[in-house]
Each structure stands twice: as C-alpha cells, then as structure tokens.
Amino acid sequence: MANQKSGLNRTTVGTIVLAALVGGFAGVLAGLLFAPQRGKDLRHSLRNNLKNRNQDSENLSQARRPGYITLNYPKVTN
Image: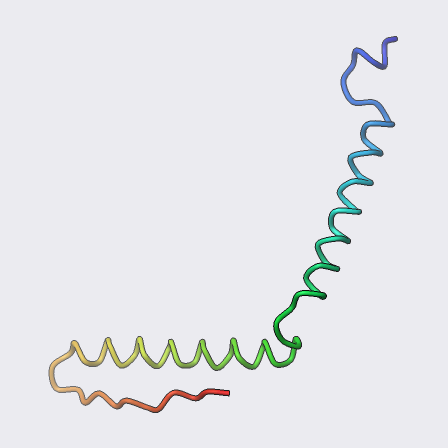
C-alpha cells in the first residue's frame, strides 16, 4: 500500500520507458519510409540552398553600401 501512495512505482516507470522507446522507433521508421530523398541527396540539396542564401544575403548587404558592385550569380538547381 505504501508504494501506491508514493507516486510512480516500478511498473509505471517501466511502462513509460517502454512507450518512449516504441514511440521513438515508430518515429524513425516513419521518417525512413516517408523521406522525400536519399540522405546523400538531401544533404547536397541543403548545402546548395544554404550557399545560395548566404550569397543572396551578401549581395543584399553589399547593395546597401555605397561604392560596391552587386554581382548576381545564377542559382544552382539540381
């Protein structure tokens, strides 16, 4: 009786841990099944997008400074 009044007992903690592991496994499985691209392709695409955004922000910052020439590079698409 003392165990039931003291809050979480071993069964409850074990159930919570098991539920978290099963939920994590289900999330990983769903991510693998519904991924739009392979990991290598996705990383390449993200890297290109990041480079383009950095270049765009540099162009914007230089365009606001007098005396600088803004170069517009073509976007790289895959």
